[in-house]
Image (cartoon, rainbow, N blue to C red):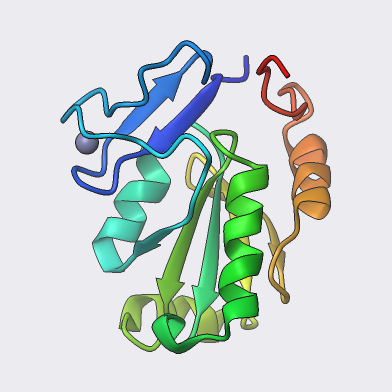
Length: 156
Ligand SMILES: [Zn+2]
């Protein structure tokens, strides 16, 4: 069963499972700080990235960026658009390979993907460009056929 929606807290890094965005108070289940239920990316490094991938109740997209803080606005926009489109359905993480040697080794060793799609820590897809919603949903539907990849069940 698709585990509804999940949001990562930037403050304490916990995941909060949300049945309905409309009915949820929008606060972290662990530390009660506000969660952004519109969907956004999360910068991660090193072991934090590993924890975030392993702990996520929903699939994860790990985007590899280089000097992310200085990256062109269009690149930030592309990643944030994806995070927004897949809000709660997929956790979007950004690892800066210039700042994080562990990410760099993965990046270099495995054909320099721009992004890797993972479920429960297992890779289910990768791409050499910034990922877009359509291809991500396609890969998810192929890799996880028993799981719904319909858009979030939120009333219009
Ligand atoms: Zn929290």
